[in-house]
Amino acid sequence: MKIPMRDAGIPMLTEIITTPTEAATFTPAPADTPTMVPTAGDVEQLAEHVRDSVLAQLESHYEALLGERLRLRLADRLNALAADLEADIKAELLHEIREMTARHTDEMIFNKK
Image (cartoon, rainbow, N blue to C red; front, side, top):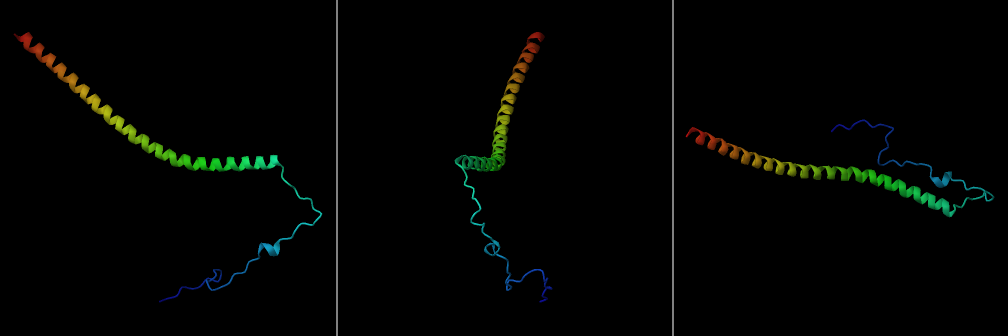
C-alpha cells in the first residue's frame, strides 16, 4: 500500500496546535473609564431590531417553503378543476351533438315523405 506524501501545512491528528486565547490578549479597561449603561429605550430599540431581524429571516425562509407547498396544492387543485371542466364540456357537447343529429334526422325523414 502506497502512503501519500504529507503536506507540512496540514496538521496531523497527533499534533498539538497552540493558539492564543482571549484571556491572554484581553486587557481590562482602566478603573476610571466610564461604563455605558443602556437605558430602557435603548433596550427596547435593540429588542425591536432583533425581533424585526429574526422575523424577516423567518419570513423569507417560510415564504419559500410555504410558497412551494402552496404552488403544489394549487397545481393539484387546478388540475382537478380542469379535469372536471373538461368532463362537463364533453358531456354538454355530446348532448348538443345528439340533439342536433336527432333534429337533422327528423327533418330529413319528414321532408322526404
